[in-house]
Length: 71
Image (cartoon, rainbow, N blue to C red):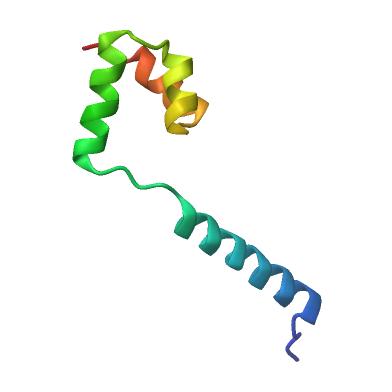
């Protein structure tokens, strides 16, 4: 005897997949030149790291990882 999943669980799985697909499609992708530009702006020191992240829309976790790395 096999059990079928309820429609509710199928809809929930489908909704989660849809949300993940939308997030993946709307995520900003930085090209090589853009990454270099952002790093150079950070090294110039014209803006604080927090300010630069706000300007570029970079996540706080990315900011923490970038500021902890050694050059």
